[in-house]
Amino acid sequence: MRGWLSLVLFGLTALAAPLPQVYDRLEEALTRVRLEEPAQATAALDRAQSLLRQEGQGLPPVLRDAAVTNLQEARQAVLRKSRADLEARLLLVRHLVGKALYDGFFQAPSGEKAAYLARLSRATSLDPARVQEVQNLSPEEARRRLESSYLQLMAEDLSRALAAPSRPEAYLSLVRAYARFLVIQDSPQSTLKAQEFVQALAKISGGENFRPDVQALQEKVAAWRKSLAASPASPPPSPSPSPSQPPAPTPAPTVAAPTPTPTPAPSAPSSAPSPSQVRLAETVLPQEIREETSLLRLNPEVGQRVGEALQRLAIPSLVNWLDLLDEVRSSLAQAQLYAETGQYQRAKAQLSYAYSRYRLKIYPVVGAYAPELAERTDRLFLAMQNAVGLRTVDFTVLLGEIQEIEERLLGGTLGPWHALQVQIELLLLGIPRAVFFLLAGALAFFPLYLIRLTFGGRNVYWNLLGLAFLFLVLPIVAEGLSYLGSILAEYGGLPALGVLANLSVAQALAPYLTWGLSAFLVVALAGAGLRGIAAQFGLLRERGAEVVPTEERPATTLTSETIVEWDEEF
Image 1: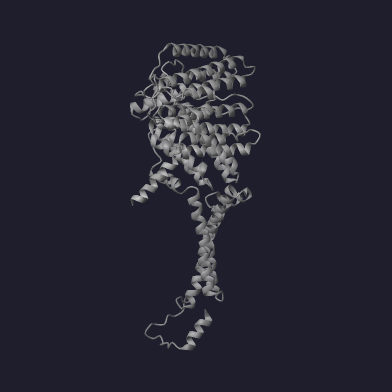
Image 2: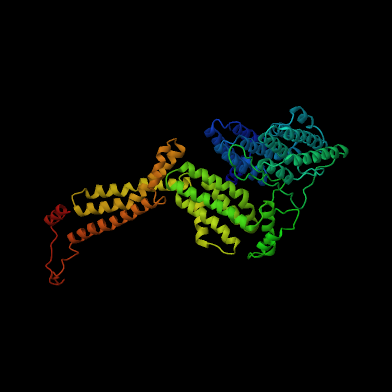
């Protein structure tokens, strides 16, 4: 028993790879992302997401979730062929992981500090020579040197944004400065706020005059550098009781094509809070939000958290948030229609977009009043994105979760039956369900073989009963074939076989009606066959025939001739 537990603990420890190794694998995936090769780029981004989910236990949850969401937005940028948006997303991903490397450097043992510094230099484009200088310094002096280097790079990026000949170039320069700020945002000398970067980026995207905002950022960066140079070496900031405010979403550039609302890049406190624990520094809510939350059947404290989440996401009212929820619902409905018609790539794309919108705009608010529902819906989204053989009923369950979010907000619920369906989905979705139906479809031929082997086919009634068995197992065989086609289409490089998914009873109306017809044939054929067999055994009499009393029935002697006659008859 102790050996088994040791093996399990070793396996769990192996799953949590060291952060420098995680970054190496992430960087290897991100280097393959190119707009010129969209198929390779989307595959690399999917690989990077899987890496962060499976091996990114060393990252704070807030950073990991933000990086995954930015990777999803990068995937959408590849599909839209938006080069500026793609580069911005990848910058944020690298610097979010860079923030974890930056914090990890000060906590790592002496023998591992060099590995953290080397990856930090690559992730955030720091000069390797300057990075190596801080390896043997005290933590306070190392922090000052690194912070000074980032501030110098931020000043250069802001100058480039002001001098940029086009808005896309200004946007990328400002995003680069914003990404560097995320790494050192916990500094006590900082007077900058993420919202200031966000407002400037929004003006660039909206075609407004952004230069005064960038100049104001320049002044604050210059003041920060002077304050850092004048102050003595200070100890690293200790974790405060209330977590720092996460940065607001980064707006997407309007280059080439319209882009979805971009990803929030949260701050990285040493212990990341859950969505229901994050609080704003300012607790005064706008009048409209206060009025709306007061009408909800929620505790005043929960209503306050909902209002703070709306304000943090820059959503002016609860009605606007419900519109965003409808947007997610609409995307899932489109994905369901695409799955029903066999367009599985488009269905997966719509599902991915719906999940990105959910993580950006829905998850933080739901986490304020129903954190367990927010986590359950998030797990269902992730399970469906990674599942093989999606069916329309899967989208129905996920749409039910979106409705449950709205019902919980208004004080209602869809009930325990819906919760049970979600748990079954989470348990069996994907490979387990596919393997179950493949086994059932393969084993369905065994009773048919036994019937044919036992009764041969000389008796018409046994043949009718065999046909009834055939139509009884036909839906099971069709379901197994549908999942075989889905597996070969997604993992075997045979996308044409994806059409077999339309054989599934859970897919569309036609297979459902076919299953009903097969059930009718089962009843008809089994009834005819069993009636004939019963008549041959003398268990049925023709209507109106006189029934011979049992005591007057002549005795029958079982002889070899009788047995031969029965054998010939059947």
